[in-house]
Length: 466
Image: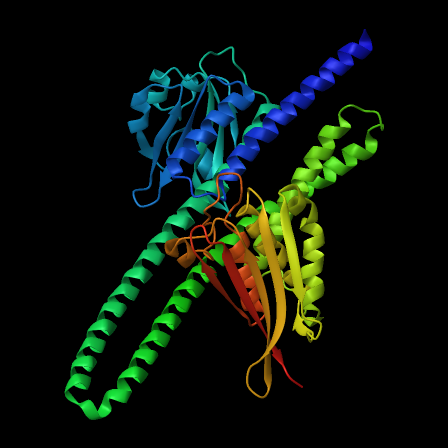
C-alpha cells in the first residue's frame, strides 16, 4: 500500500513537472517566432494562470515614452482593466519593477500600493513578478486569487518566474524584430528610390546613345555596369539583413544556453540515480533528447552570428559532405529519397572548418528532404573549376526534384526566420546559417528553381593555388 502511494505521489510530481515544462516551452517557442506581441502576451498569461491553477491574471507593459504602465492583457478579469494606466512607480507593478524582486501578497486590498481598479475587479491575493531583460524593466506578470483563501506558495512563485524569464525574452525579441523590420523597410525604400533614379539616368543615356550612333558600343557596357550595380546593391541589402539578425541570433543563443546546460546536467544526474527498471527513466531520456536538440539549435545560432569561431585548417570538402550524409541517412531513407553522389577525386583541400562545412551540407540535405515529402531524387556533385592563373573554384551542387520555389520565394530564400515550410517543419534558419558559413569561407551560393521543377543550389568555394 505504501509503495502504491509513493508511486502515485511520484507520478503526480512528474505530471506537474511535465505540465510546467510544456508551459515554459510554449512561451519559449514564442521567443524565436514572428508572432504579434499581443498574441505572445495572451498565450503567456493563460499558460501562467493554468500552470499553478490560479483564478486570474494580468500583464502590465511599461510605456517608456510616457513613463506609465498599461494593462493590455487580462485573463478572467473585467474588461475595463484593459484601459487602466498607472504611473510607472505606482501600484504593486511599479513597486516590483523598481525593486526588481517578485512578491507574494496574501491581502491585496490592504496594501497601500493597491490600485482601486484591481480591487474593484475582485483581486484578493497575488504573485507579482517583474519582467526584466538584461537589467531593464519591461513590465510585470501577475497571477491572482479572487478569494483570500487562495494563498500562493514559494514553489508556485518559482514556476511563474520561469514563465516570466521566457516572456521577457519573447517581448525583447519582438521589439527588436519590429525595429529591424522598420530598418529593412527604410533600406528597401531607399533602394527603390535609388533604382528609380538609376533607371531615369539610364533612360537619359539611351536617348543620347540613339542620337550619337558612333558610340553605340558604349550602350552595352553601360547596361552591364548597371546590372553589376544592381547585383551589388542586392548583396548589400542581404548583408545588412544578415548583420542585424546575427546580433539578434547571438543574443537569443546566449540567453538560451545557460538554462539548457542546467536542464541537461540535472536530467543526466537524475538518470544516473534511477534504477534501470524505473518506469520514469524513459521520460528523463526524452527530456535529455529535447534539450540536446535545443542545444544544437543554439550552436547553429552562434555559428550564424559568427560568435562560435574555430581556427581554419586544411579541410576535405568531400569528407564533410559524406559525414553529413551519414547523419541524415535515416531521415532520407524514411522519406524514400534516393541520393546520387558524384564526387570529384581531384579536389584540393581548402582552408576552412570541417564542422561548419558539415553543418552547411547537412542543412542543404535537410532542406532538400523537406522539399520532397513524397520522395524523390537528391543529386550531390563536387567538381573543380579553374578561375584565372592563380585561382581555382570548388563547386558543390545540391539538386533536388522537390516542389521548387517561385521567384518571390527565391529572392528571400536566405533571409533568417523566413520559411515556406508548414508549421513545425522548420525555423527558417537552415539556409540562412548555410549562407553565413559559405560567406565566412569566402565563398558564394546561387539558387535556381521553379515551382514544380525542383531546386538547384550551387556553392562556390575558392582555392588559392600555391
